[in-house]
Image (tube, rainbow, N blue to C red; front, side, top):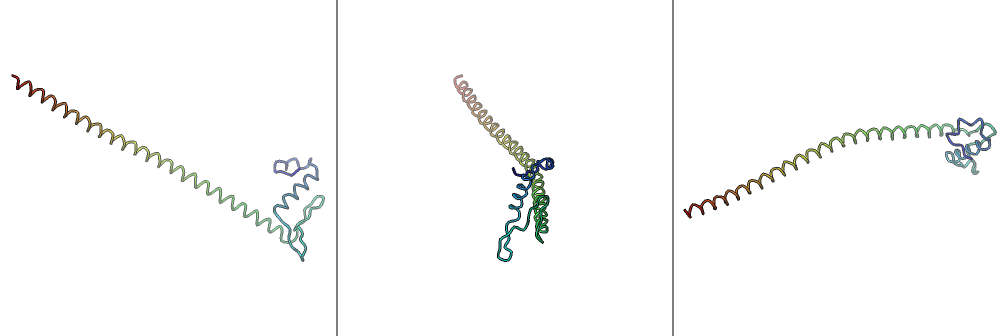
Length: 138
């Protein structure tokens, strides 16, 4: 029976003990015990309908909220910057891959034409030899 965020809209119909239990759980997580005059006490107290805080606790809670908002905004900004840089990187990488493919095609084409040239020279020399043999026999 802890109080979760989606239950807030139904808080009027909830069991008061479940609300109190959920509030205690959250407060235990956020505000641990403090040592006051050698006695460990929580800096808060829960009544039937209200939560009471010792002096300075609300300021600490507001600081925690501000830090959370600042960290969340920083993460969001970081994520947006990462997405922008990633998009630019993917475009750059695609262009590099295309350039590499074109270069490989050019190298292969040149190699192919070199092979064709060598074959043509071999055929030409072979035909020349055959023609010279025929000429000698005449």
